[in-house]
Image 1: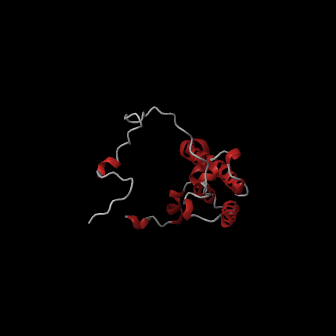
Image 2: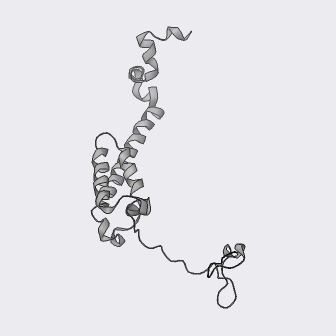
Image 3: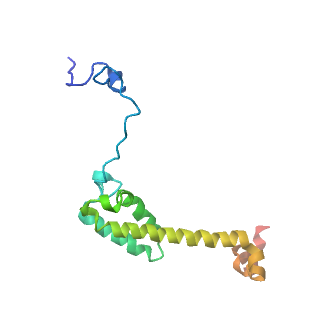
Amino acid sequence: METRVAGVPEDEESGLLPRPSAAGRRPSSAAPRFRPPPAVWATVDGPLGLPLEEAEGHARRFFLWGFACLPFLWAINCCYFWPILRSPAASTPAAFAPIRPYVVRSAIGFSIFSVVLITWATTFIVGGERLFGPTWNDLVMYNVADKLGISGFMG
């Protein structure tokens, strides 16, 4: 014998369609949209993520280790604590207040690092020998094999 759950329609497909309103019409798609509530969880993992007690320590460690020539940890910090970074400071719950400065500073640090890296790479890609002159031959890596005399085995 099949059991029925209260409130679930008998037809399986009717659960996929919008329910008719009280007047018998389907609800309008032009209904006013409401903003979602502010973040409840500190991490993108939601309830499976870190408890708030550990989240501050992780955010601080990611931020500080980013200075140790590992700036991609700043990007990881921003991605992992995205709900905190995304919500405005005024609507951020008080429990996230100690975490927010580390995440915002990580975002600023990674932005600066990205601009410097892209500028450096663009300088070498676009400028090349015209920009650096004869020094270019000492800077490029593909001349290292010729300088060390190990390119003869390539045939």
